[in-house]
Image (cartoon, rainbow, N blue to C red; front, top):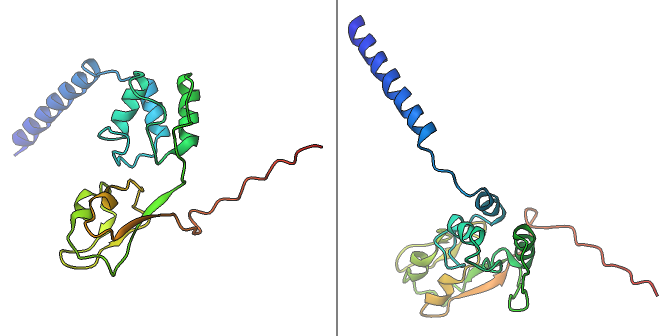
Length: 178
C-alpha cells in the first residue's frame, strides 16, 4: 500500500516537474502591445470588426494591419484612444457614432424562425422555434447581425435605454468667453 502511494507520488512529482520545466523553457512570448490593446477593446468578441474576436483584432492593430476605427461598439472614443496608444493618425470622418445600440423585437412581426438567434454571437436572443423571441439587453452588443437576417423585419436597432447601470453624469458644456 505504501509502495503504491510512494510510486504515485514520485510519478506525480516527475510529471509535474517536467511540465513546469517545459512551460518555462518552451513558452511563447506574445506582443505586449497586443495585450494592452486587447484590454482596451470591449471584449464582446462580436465580430463586427471582421476578425474572429477581440484578441485577433488586437494582434492586427499591434502589427499595423488594421485601422484603429475597426471597432463599432467602441465608437470614436475607443478609436482615438487606440490612435494615441499606437501613435498613428485616426481618420474619424467615416466613422458613425450612434452610441450604444441594442436589438428590439417587434412581437407582432416575429414568426419564430430562429434565424436571428443562430446569428447572434453573444446568445442575447432568447426564444424557441415557432415562438416569439426576445432580447436580453445586457448581453446584446448591437452588432446588427440579427436584424440583417430577419425575414420579416421584426428586429430593429434602438438606442440603449438608460438604467441605473448605464447612466453617466453628462459632461459639462464649455462656456465660451465673449
